[in-house]
Image (tube, rainbow, N blue to C red):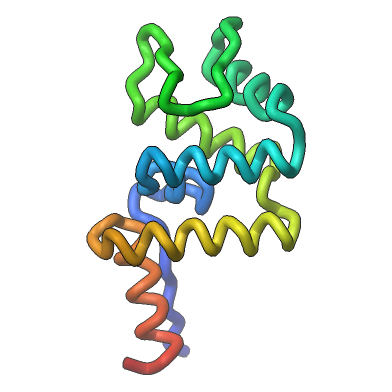
Length: 127
């Protein structure tokens, strides 16, 4: 039996891979979707817990500055939190995430998630 397996680079979850690859504006759009599905405070508190900080976070991701944490660290924690809490597990939010991701991929075909999705698309359509 010939079975194809497609995994995100870095052995990341889907949420982690997405937050690692999105532009800053894409990260903000995804956070806005999480805010809609829950509350801003609940989303930001979940992130703060995993970051191990007690400071409050601005609604605007670009305003976040956390001592001792790089932007990659913060994005990783956002992705882990999204997976753990299940921010996008509702169909309506999942569809909206798909639109944000598709828009981002159109602008940058070289990011790791685009490479994996392009490979998967080729397999699906037999190209």
